[in-house]
Image (tube, rainbow over all chains, first blue to last red; front, side, top):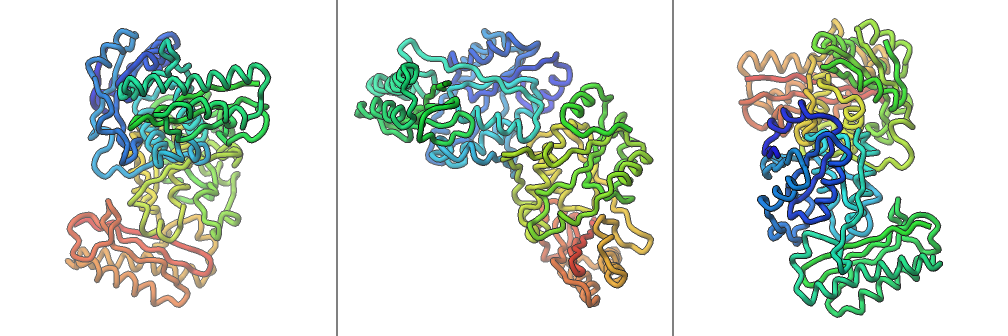
Length: 279
Length: 279
């Protein structure tokens, strides 16, 4: 597995890479969810490249950029085991040289949910992903359904800016007890982790109720909210049942694919999860 | 010469085009300045593609989008004569389908001069150029020095977003009397056109004074301003002597390349011109 750390090396590699090229952008601290993206790319593509870069622009000033888990050696071993060909590991100076001043902004789909609670977060995501796309020039790029709004935002950016890239969504990977895998799960205490199961439990209840014929969005939203609120350590940022394409909150029956999503804080740790309900 | 009007046709053409591909984006209403860009691309590149698209997003609400001159047949004849291989002529619906919501923004270099007088103008430019770059995927893109701030903005965007494209600047082309060619010159009355020669005359005076040893930026700025102000039909938007890289206004001696630029309105017609002074 080749490890590249600067732009000239990456460009030289890309000029000779076999198509299609599949790309898995990550912030490192890899878990089985990231590995599943690399494995999906490996099935589809002649060449698979991943990136490891903790992007400061997508963290707010009071968020966890400094303490975000970093384990380059462990990450590289996991990517190699997943059959990745190349890993791009740029420094901060490579990605944001002095004077960097350009931003990619997607309106609308970024206004709500994570966007409302994390100002500037999606500008950070779309800008770094644009840069990585321009550097890697992939044919296909792989993202997890776990970050559903990020996925919707990147799809919209790719469409609006005519990027010649297929965006591939991969299912959320969960622990045996249902907790969605996240690099931030390592922050949780034992008590917090047990109570954090309420996220997936609430979503599962909503999905089961929907499958039993309950389609009223506010009722489903309440069902999820009550499941989480029963946990004393849980602080809810939002619980949403929204149109899966526009992310506009639904107030009546679900008649098109709906994204049920939530963000909940346990102490200083913020978790998100979601499920899509399709009528 | 091939004429393409939609994205699938363009992508199919691009997949088979010979490299390097040179790209000349235009808003049509072509004059000898545009033709010089196409000719420069023809010398450098195996394949030359131009585009014709009057981009509404780079016009302000009170600007001349509606009356901007359009002459597709004449433009195509000029491009063919310049040896262009392919012309992309998209409709508004192709470039901005319903719900388009993504913007590319460059900070800093867009704040002053044209940016200060035309709010949103450069966001319109950088967004459409990003889209066209993603569609055409050129190796080299050609822009006129006439739109000096546009050129600086696109260079900064290409650098900041790691676009794998060489930006090539081509000299301003002038009529025999010195007037910089512009698609907007057709709007000028006979009197206005005669007085509009004060733009190039003021810049030439500044250049000659600089070559004679006058390096004080405010004095050079006054010299240009006074030349234009002597014309009764001239309304000055700005006269600037600025650092050529940052476009920050200079208040002392010129010690690095300086951009002398100005924007002047004659009735409803707004003209710009510039010259670079290199110590």
